Image 1 (spheres, rainbow, N blue to C red):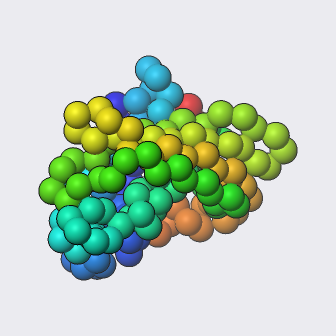
Image 2: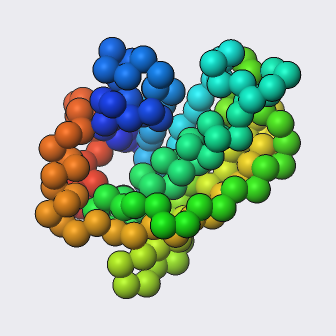
Length: 160
């Protein structure tokens, strides 16, 4: 397993000292099953209503999880073109959410990814499908310059 670097100002994977509102998720890559993994425990600031997680928070988590999966598959950073979320059950505040995603079909500069958010009990909370566009190499290199790497982080632009 390898972790991914963070983009300090990112609302999902950022550094709380740079962005106090970040969710602070650290994503990991499992090469054995070729998927991205992450977890997040929502607090009161992530409520939609009545102790439930806001759907936009789940959507952001799934979007970023799938984006990392596509980045690994194409060895380039990618932008979301289309995002579809199917909410299956309410996510509760204070309960860990486990996320995973993998890239699937690729054609030209595009690829599809699928993701899931599950409760710590394994219940499906939401599933997602998205289409991503691969950034040109020069843009990916500029984006990488803004990332913060720690030892052992996966550099998706490096040769395998």
